[in-house]
Image (cartoon, rainbow over all chains, first blue to last red; front, side, top):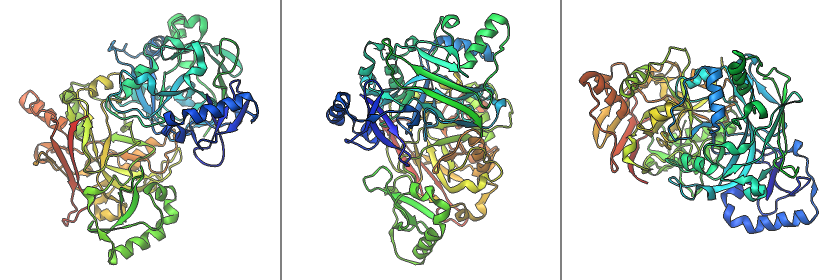
Length: 320
Length: 320
């Protein structure tokens, strides 16, 4: 099934089902919002599936992802992993950080989730001097997950999403040195318009990972197409890690961290900091600047047969 | 004004006004929940004040804080500072951490806030081996605060609260080394039953700090009575820090971090880790163990004239 949320003047918007080709949508009759659906997910599957099948058979109205909100416009928890090892190594290079010990634990922080931006919303930030960067990621939205969930963690994943995690790179290392994680360095995130159940990905949902390239362009120029599969931990591992000492409420969003591949010189990157890391390695210094106000970024994932998946994130960054 | 939230079977509970002596309460007629009140705080002040004045004149029912929920049973953001310098120094000693550079920036992380525990709720945690500790804190609950708020940050503070921030100390340093902050080391927090407007504190609300001792006991034995005033940054500074690159939604909770005083040998501590830090300094090694299942902690703050303020947190920790 595929879901989008259209604006209706409320913080949670109005849940819609979206047809398999992302071309048509219809307001969900079973529940009004995605949070309501997630609160009772398992019990609603029959009704939602019937609505989805009917939409795929015909009807609905044209779906325009550029006018959608984030599929989940606000969530009770946003836990962002960082589990692409090539990303970690490049960022250590560019920021001069110590290599992390191999602890067998995924990296994860908690970020703000009282609002996820719409996929084509302008992003207002305080200063170009902060090193404005995009980060293309995949993520999952969970059903309610009790503390201690481990073996069945994969079953807690309700939906897969695509995320842009804005980052302020000049502030990042200052906050990391404290050990407390990020507050100022991690502003609001955005989500691509369509959230999909894992089965929609077919064989591209593999080992609780998204085996598809994320196509990223910056100001209209291709920037990278890294594939989502190379996660050192699957989303199931991330769910279990997050649930060790806390309950995860329905609608918890868990991110992969910036998608990154070991053959980064061929496939490029999903954030500027990583390209700067490659430049630091290859040319002795980082040359690519971070974003300027007025710049835009586009992120989109396309299935192996060319069909759309999550729809596109297309955002401009402007002065707050 | 003083507010408490009583259980009614919903996640947000039912907002009550509490009399100035914390002895009586009455359901709020203006709004049903504290989140609703915070969403429209300034415009509701007249109505809320009239309800509060009427309650103080008489009426209502007896208030029993042990049956209350947290005044704000869930919040969209929980940003916990750590701004008592003596606390930081002692924890560096006990955990062998490098001293933090003096950056002029408050320490702060984002923790889980989809639920705050009731003041007398049992806390379920996975293992005694994780180093279970309490942390007595003060906190503020904010009105909606736009990104970039700085000079008027103090005006965004709606309420003052008292918090127990559970910590798993064996996991803390492991997560700190990553720079990403805490996920597993920071389980759910609890709140004392009564949230008060700053004016209720009288002269004890000084420089956006709570100038009152927090009385902490562990298994019935006095553990510490540190005063809240020694914050290196006031709550106004913490609000401004948090709002640099994000909007703070109405109901954002900002914590002081564990209350701690430079004369810790006289006044004791508000967490076990700090006592262990003192032992490490004075006796060469930390001797006091962390909590065992079945242990309880009590935290209460009393005004200079002996009157109650936030009511008591009294929690037992048990195996999940």
